[in-house]
Image (cartoon, rainbow, N blue to C red; front, side, top):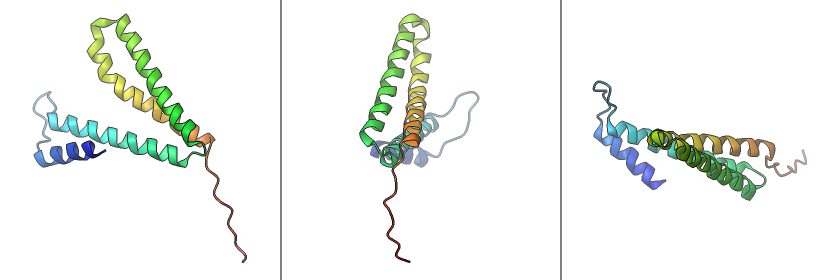
Length: 120
């Protein structure tokens, strides 16, 4: 998380977010990566904290990450010509799938609030 903050600060300090032709500045790409990773980590922490079964939620998220990476590896073995393109998309797809799994598991296993003792 600290690395994400440092990358965001460095990219914002550079301040060069103009588009030159078809090339996106390297700082903007770093900023997008850092923001997506920070958002993903915040979502995973929120899903785990809101779930009634914290360890199972975390297990499902990790299992979905591993399965997407394994399927991507098999795809790279099947089509080695496009390995770089597959790897470039694999991280984002793995984060989206594991976040969706975490959200679904948290939605079905919400924590119940403690009973309030209103003697009104």
